[in-house]
Length: 339
Image (cartoon, rainbow, N blue to C red; front, side, top):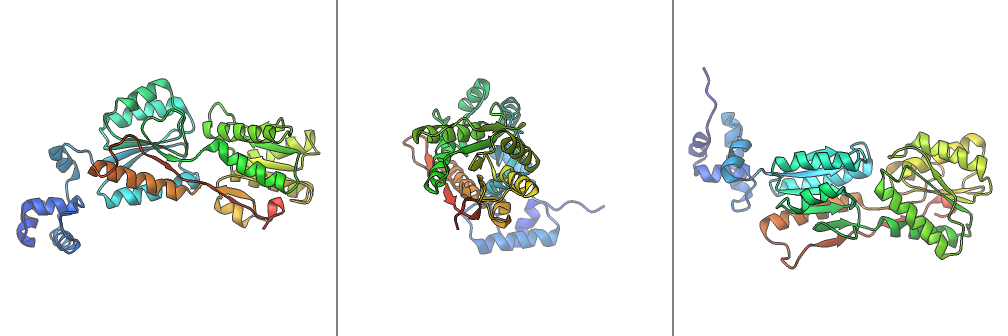
């Protein structure tokens, strides 16, 4: 019977110590790339598979970072996780992902499960959590990074932006182009806390300009889909036909609103302007192309991953929690008469 090759056998074949083999598979920076490549090729030739579980038990490290996101089919969150994973992989860390489905109670349950597995760090989406989830994270004993938000009472480290302020950018853009009767399309704010912040930002920006902020259409639980965006636009056109511009909580809803206008022969932007949030790929290929706000999701993931790598190496500042603000950018396109 063939026996599984051991780390000792790999070390002997590669002409290095067992410790060096272990370091090669843990992406330890203390060995050169050439040595790592030589050891891994030797291991491949022998058919050796590194036992990361046993290694982590010996080193008292789990080797993974726990991450929670609201949705796995949202392109923005997918970009964040991809960039985060790449940056952590370079540091020899893996990602364990949990989906909250925009539900704070589910986030609380996931955080409890993930922390029982002793992650090296925890990354969560948003700055709103249940009290129990906050207590668990505060007592976790590992770095906690809140992303996609600028919470008023951060748990620790933050990589994100103000979802309230981004709507001020959008309202400023629309009013500068002469629009005054502006509506907001969003989902149930009891679930989508970042969407609720954008809605609050919209209302505040309208009030600051002395404009009516009451044109608010709520459709379903988040994430608001294209179909729901179309339904919201139908309600708006039927009940408030004098509306001049619409801001959607996210680009899929904005695209749905655009299709409803096309079905009814409502011209965009001549009859009504439409804008979204997220700068999804669909916003750039829609006809007309949709004005949006780019929150730079990959940059959020990269910065969060680098911060965690620095913290676990002991390289990050010891002067308290780190705040990294990633500033979104307005992308003006034809749907608001720009571009």
